[in-house]
Image 1 (cartoon, one colour):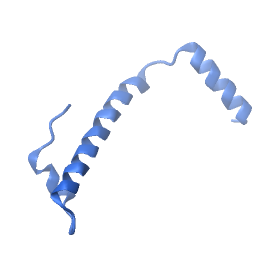
Image 2 (cartoon, one colour):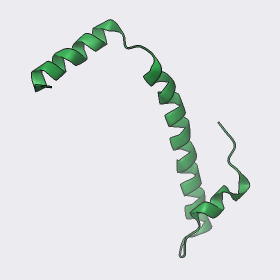
Image 3 (cartoon, rainbow, N blue to C red):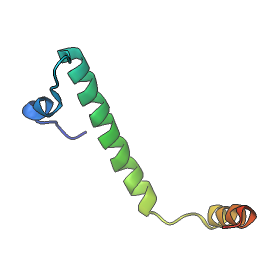
Amino acid sequence: MKPVALNHAANYRRPGTSSASIAETLLLAKIGEDLREVYRAVAVEAQPAHLAQLAHRLDAKRGR
């Protein structure tokens, strides 16, 4: 995981929010960032041929 800057929480401060909700927001933001990083690597890889064929057949049945 990439470290989050200590002042990063300042971007999320809003009137009426508690430090717990800010911590949850930071945690969710970090999880989202990590998931995007994982799936970015998956998305750039070539699809297996059988999955690509299946996707094309499904698209054809949907009329795309």
